[in-house]
Length: 440
Image 1 (cartoon, one colour):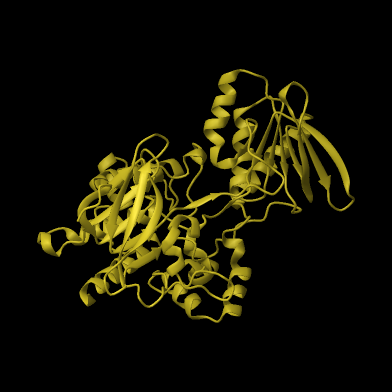
Image 2: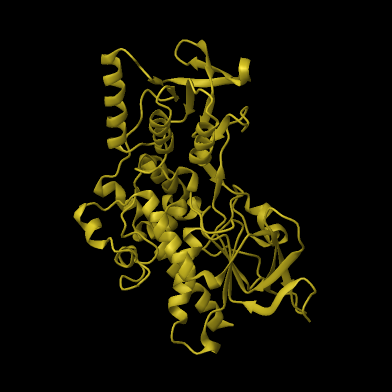
């Protein structure tokens, strides 16, 4: 019997939690599979997204920022090069295909790739319920004690209203990452994580209050982009970049190093002993973590040097340094205490804004999965055990599937949170769901 709060009598084959690029790619794989099939052979899919519409790192869609992966690593091409959901098909529909090709680049503007994502998401919009925040996942036990389904409960995000529960044989969790705030620091009106960079900077500019100094904490691509963006947005402000390195580290995007993102590299990583996994992460962190594109490094350095020659230095790089304290200063400003680590010398910077470009971390899956989390097997290090097909390993009585799209760096390597293999991963999950249905 249908519960009073059940969304419908349908038992979905796949229910996606979150609708970023990963589950978008999976929804397209399902849509393409279903095309031309009789209704009783199709996969029934539903995706729940807490945002009111599709959005991917909107706060960092800087007008001239480019993607760091090839456009061929879009939502579909590595899975199905003939798909009409590809980036090239999007360009053709928008009338920009020839213009893009004339640029002779593999790396589109980030805002254009976001437009591509929105275009693809609109085409599968009938599979998505926006404004729905998942609040719990409850195992559904049969009379024999086996768990063949999950009840996924959601509520309207950001507003009042009751809950709705959908039942599914498999769930695909792609809840994304959450901003990392260093210990001792708290977001505030003038302390932002870089994920909010563009709207918060626009609001500050609209206020009309003078911006004399901005401090950016971090040494990765987002930090360098924030420094460059704020330097251009507030032409009278001093922009101070604080990081513990001696200088920005160039991203290693050389051909051999980039093979760590190949689909075959996931096979190698997955089957490797734990010590080999760790060494691969250590060796190749420079492909992704706390690194900056060389073009941006050179541009920032050239700008700083021109200012030094002109005698008006608005770009300052406080290297080998750490922020030790942030206190409210006079007139609404911030007093940011920065320590130069080699000597311990400290200085206090009176700043109007502090931007924390301090990265992201995986969301707490235990809190998201609720009761279902107790059915997941874990390693000796308390990490969730995940199969090669991205399916969580569970206790024997569970036949329903939990698939993770992200949060699997410990099992699948550096591509876990990146766009590089979203199309391939969607295919692997899709095939696994089909195999499970055939075996049922």
